[in-house]
Image (cartoon, rainbow, N blue to C red):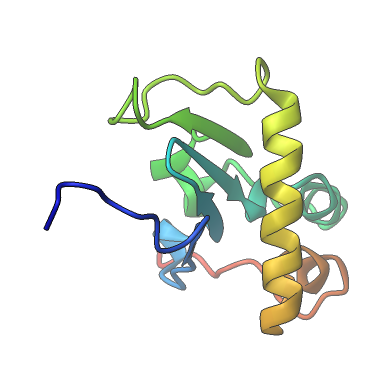
Length: 130
């Protein structure tokens, strides 16, 4: 009522996992009052290594709509609300800090680790719809 806004939480977490073959790109996100970190799990090194070993092109048909999405994206929502400039390389310490908070949250919540599921063959690449 007095115009002041108190923060309800320090972070907001998000998840996206579509199982439609042409839109498959599992993501986990965390944001604070200024920055948003997006981790695109299909593009994680341990997942890419397994896919390559199995002869699957991770940038192939089933991810083609997302072929230019980075594995890690950090965006300054105050100065770049449309998330056009990825700051992950310039702000590595912020990426590390936010990723650690997200990993702790996911572990505490008992969320499955999609990267480990891929590595341990609990998940398979989507089948082409053609």
